Image (tube, rainbow, N blue to C red; front, side, top):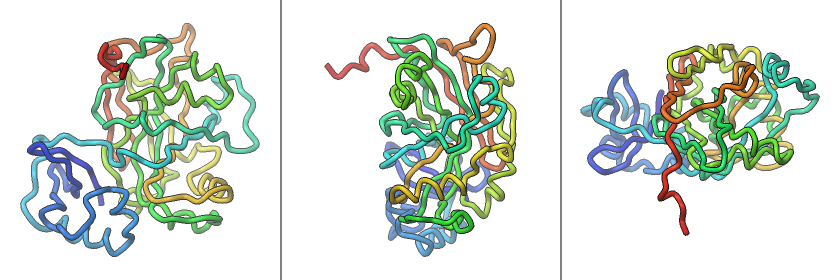
Length: 290
């Protein structure tokens, strides 16, 4: 099942994607929560009701809607660095003995086809195509062999990075958290439809040029290992987004570096999930709150 947030007729709702159309849950299952995190927190009965509703009613063509970030305001947005061997090699880094997690500020989240900003304060803008997953249950101390039970679904993440700001502090947070630098989507794909999350092809294109190509079987710390580690430390909650790392091919590692420029289009594809695509624009002059 593909669960999406979409805007149609000036209203944003949740729907079930079927082929090239979407079924509006606000119409077909009005008793369900209208917020994605609340829907996930309602558990298996709510998701089963959504699945049933997706098979009824009059669908809306996807061409007539705007797809939004599936989880627009996650309480947490975590990512992991140096999690593909080839990316470790191109980064000239030592393979980590323990997962290297960092957080992206949740204000960076944007939609699957929304523009990403070239910051006023840097030209070192880079892409990182990644598989992400969303937690569906409040949980703690999850053993690896049960980690699959707490995943609500999978999506695509572009862990957009501002490299000079990223390297100014060991936490990486500042360079990973600029506004618009967390495109996610295009929808949430439930585990039954996504299949084995550790056997998915991943590709990233810039202006149609293939820059990254790998498979999630090459993850150093896979999705389940990440859940086991994180849940030993703190409670995982519904709607938490976790991005699983990027393979080789980032612009910063090229010689010379090939950073993103205004007008560039970045497309990230993950097998069985779909794709997201974002155009780089200059940070708008009206983005200041002062």
